[in-house]
Length: 305
Image 1 (cartoon, rainbow, N blue to C red):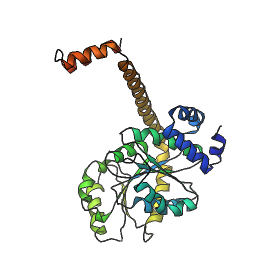
Image 2 (cartoon, rainbow, N blue to C red):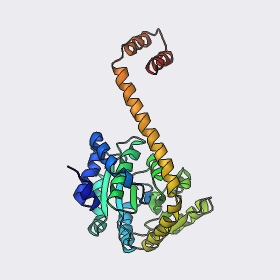
Image 3 (spheres, rainbow, N blue to C red):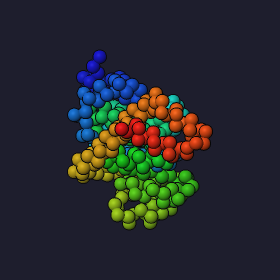
Image 4 (cartoon, rainbow, N blue to C red):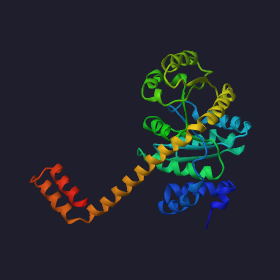
């Protein structure tokens, strides 16, 4: 059954089904992407990242409502790098985002299967489905911290880094890699003690950096600063649209590279699995007659002939 016509109408059931295909059924996913690929690459992608507990979900809920008021049609993908099953944090996210779902924002959680690079694969294709369904911008929320933040900045046109005054080591985290990726830095939960000091610290650290990011205070609880954030993002979307073509070219280069490496790796695994010389060399290594590097070199040469 062809679901593309229902996707074009942005029917929720079709979108959910299509994203599940992309996550779980590589064969069907290829057929689907083939049909919709030409219509992809048009939406602006906003990555929202930052340490767990920074209040991203409640913030995104309110932000989606404000973006809709600005005549935009946002969708949200919450990427959970830790969960193979859809549990824990994700269910909490859904609950915190009900308001924006009711107003027509599409929200979906996807697990990144824990591997670096894997996030890019399922997220890229989920983005294509949402683009085809007419959503713009598409907000990617990373649940959890670490490598995922840097990965998301490679996919996003605009990266928003959130902090909250009670993460304690937030000043240390500011120094670690995150300073290069943000277009916007937010002190969220700005109704809490310590928000002004954190805001000041971020300005001192990052305010003078090359990309001169926007630094804002927001509070989802008090609904403060979120209108301003929505306006800033809408302006950035039109400004960044000019450089999007170049960004997409780079992203596609890295995607093609990933897919080819993945294909080659699978082919070689299959070949080694059925290779007699693999077991011969393995025996030599196990019997200490040859070291692993020499054996690997000889096997590699025989595979690449």
